[in-house]
Length: 433
Image (cartoon, rainbow, N blue to C red; front, side, top):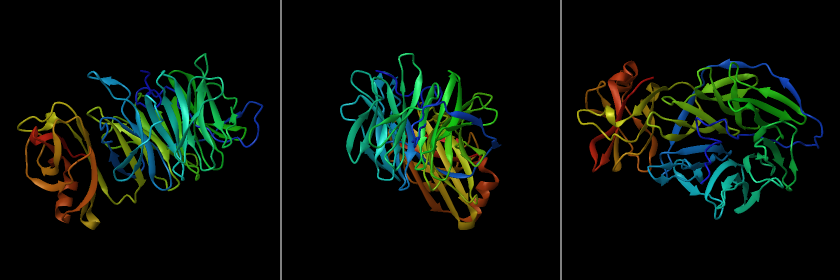
């Protein structure tokens, strides 16, 4: 079966990704390219919620979000692992954990990528003959969207005016960005080897070109005015989503090859890295500034993430949960996960988000313990068990305990338990900032 993870899977982001918008007039000449002056900031304050699909908690990608906070995405890597195929299966998600399957009828695999405020969605699917098609789901009616005469298409974004963007691949394996109007007509901007990934309600299209297999240059297209959008110092920038306020999100590789997410606005880039991640991609943003994407954790899981701007009053800690960290009895040698813990001293509260996958048994307990690395210790905060692979919440905790954790987070750890396999602890990680 054809691999559908090329577009989104971390480590293979040189595949087809694109963003498009409506060109409000017929474009017959080459788009004029200009370089914009950009500034780079190394961090941004977001509060994160981790999401692991109950269908396949080892691999979840969140790709679009509308203003009602309904999220589009998919689970399953599309790969065969230990003899078992993990096919891409699409969904929409209403937080905290209401997953609704959404797959093109009779498809082998589906990714749901864009979602508008009506709840209409777009994406792509692979049919039983291993051919990739774009699709739209408008009011519950699925329609294949393929540029005429082509055999490989993807829809990667849509706006609230019925327009969608994506790309097709020609016989020479070159990508061509396109805009599909609400009435079904296609516009193909004259941008070589391009992918359109998003379009907002003003008809601004974003996307990227790929001069080589290892480089990518972002662009913003307004009518026939095209401007580059590259993170300073990076040779690989892919804008992936935008809103009506001019904010753009995406991914870039740094000089060392590490993958980071970004949010761009008014000439400024801010990197977005989920604490404890080895690679982060931000794929969608709504008009509230809420972002969605995914990251790779220390256990190798791909975990969905929702981010909301914060006031910066919390202290965020993280822990990478692995079985080898459990003492005195080792935990599960397979699987693991991530814990994010935010301390709020001013309101005597600890908020958390957990995501784990691949552990044997039923997840039945999760705690914060007092204890340095290599030592066990008593429970100081009880967390909600992870019944579906991820959980989030807040608990009241004394100011005194919050202060102690904040002063020395390495003396505290998070662990999860499973029954009947690892009742003493399946995976554990020390807190760090």
